Length: 418
Image 1 (cartoon, one colour):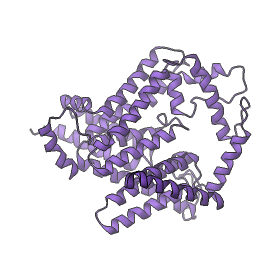
Image 2: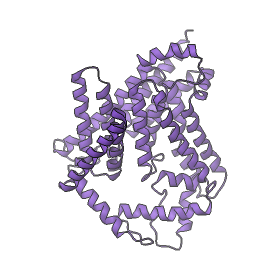
Image 3: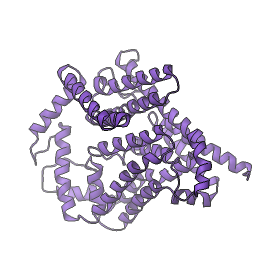
Image 4: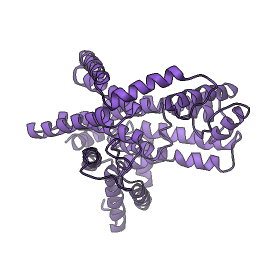
């Protein structure tokens, strides 16, 4: 049945805005927000609510994301917090609500393919600009966040390295999916340049760990357990070589070892990023111990932390720089189970996606988040949280719905896998 012209315009606007987000997320927060408004407005204006509800009911990853946000919403009804913190933190988690929106808007294979290439293009711009800054082709300006010694582009060092680690994995997957030898070589070269940017150009411990996890999974994805063994050997050799050669990796790993050895519980040190995190974790476990089951409520961490450290020498904090601990403080073991269920569902359902490329990208994304959330509250951060929601919605828009009949699935599958 043909839809009215305004509905078709709304659908098309939402779809193209969602595709454009792939290019925007690595580059511009302001453009992200404009495109998000267009996506949501187009999604709302396009109607078809029965189809949208069916799509949500048949998509377990969307249901898991909505369940976690629902718990966060309930968490605003109990506990104690500073004025304004409940809506502030709840708004930070609103990216979870966009997962079913993106999944519906990008449900068609051509749109998903364009969106993946848009993300690759945005990451490529970041990669090229980083090298241009590193070699002095672009002088230091107020536009870019870094300089030749730390050539990040428009994000923080930590976010930049996460983007480049995921970019290396994406480029490698595009190389494996390439239809010609020339394209395969181009994507493989870009993957190596992105990996070199993470390890040799910009310091960032989280990026090192994310890249390591993605390299191991790449080996497993290529050759199963034998490939994983090869990847472990190659990664160990690379780490050994990088620690012996003077450069950002050697400097950062030496600094981490020094900060760990110097950390003393109860003695804050603002100049030690590792020591600061360890102190946050130690103090946060004390908060969790008081209310382990349901936590202290959404947005409660700043007040709970301030109360727990009132008579101690401690650095101030509004989150513990660990997403798992932050959810534990707010929602207790129930919330942590919901978060882990979301991640586990993401991993488990990835093989049901529409293509090997989407399958492996989905698992690479969840590895990135699972590792990064050990050291950061990434669901709170704009770039990391939105990237997770957008790419999850995109990839799981191709999930084979359990609500479809067998005949309908046979009709849909060829178009998804074309």
